[in-house]
Length: 346
Image 1 (tube, one colour):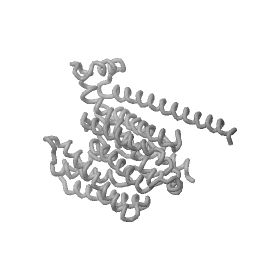
Image 2 (tube, one colour; image 1 turned 30 degrees about the vertical axis):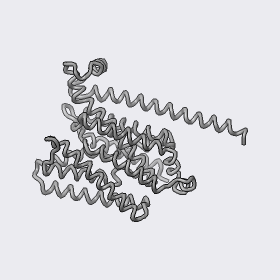
Image 3 (cartoon, helix red, strand yellow; image 1 turned 90 degrees about the horizontal axis):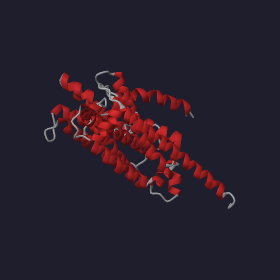
Image 4 (cartoon, one colour; image 1 turned 120 degrees about the vertical axis):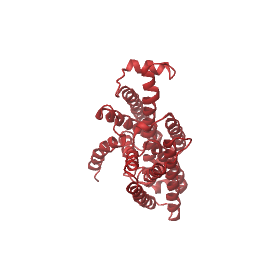
């Protein structure tokens, strides 16, 4: 046994080195995507001009400074934080439900947020005189309310993964129907605004959305990283987790609450964005495996990267305006899911 230990240690060290290299390469790709997203738009700005404007700060009185600091940089950072939140939440939803096709939308939280936004748009609910802030707040509150409702319903039935998924699906259909009812009863102008909100539009990004999404992502990720060993054990199966002395029900509750916050804040500002929370975890797993010490940060990185690439594509596809990023992520996500299904058909 002692003779095999150095070999095992060497293999483990090599695996971790490979994971670190992959993580660093992913961060480099994320940085390049940030530059590309800042450069592409109706007013093309070169890399040198971008770096100069960023270094000069928001106080410089130039056209590039206004474009970057007031318009593009909030959108880019929102892409990173929203995509990261959806990637991390998607990973944890798949972990606690033991379902590789689960996503933030499986639990119906996004549908509840959309319904909250539809109510705000219909009645003209504003906070501090801003309609967009009232819409975001009501979307967040509805999402959290439904999250707690799903949890307590699941707790009454033993908090099984099947109960969570079925309850989420029920909520998804219910709130989607309520939103459609509001659109049907609203005027043509209001119905169009509600419909556009559900597409996931980065044009609604502000420094407020950057601050909220960034703080929530960092705080939630740090909490989840503290449970990385337990989550890795849970991904191997409930029996394995129980045998290691892990309180699975308590772990599921904590992870569910954090994931619900991440999903709610992600969709509250820019609307519904599909497939990011489903695709990013699978991409990370294909490269790193199930060790959540490395998997969780890479899911956040891939989520942000997918959002940034979708933002770039949306700008290129619609010259002079910006195609809603939710449409692009869905177009990219559908064929990717087919590839996953064909590859892992067993």
